[in-house]
Image (cartoon, rainbow, N blue to C red; front, side, top):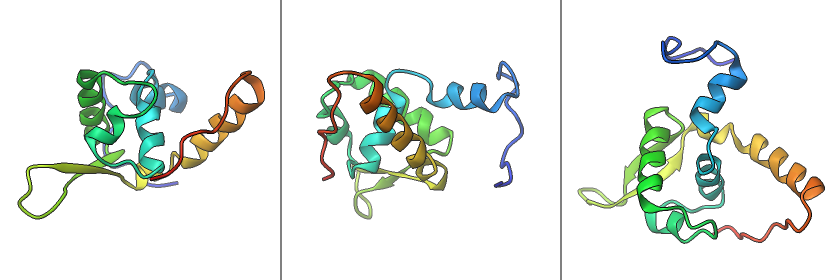
Length: 120
């Protein structure tokens, strides 16, 4: 198990790992951003073009939160550029099995679901 880089946040409701993970990932939009990153989407405009139509103010907030939590990194598109792309960190890449499990669960139990998004 990887070593913890920071002490438990005093704002956490409990030390339960599920609870702690949900404090970072447990809203309507966050895992969809991680999903998009796994599919090769890296730019703000890529995330806004996803079929769920995330509002830009919420997208900005979630990208900032995921960056602060070490799930993603913000990287300049080119040296000295004012535009950025986002990429999963090791912590973020470790969410891939979770997304695959949620995909399998949704396909099995939610009628009308399909895998329709293609990687870039």
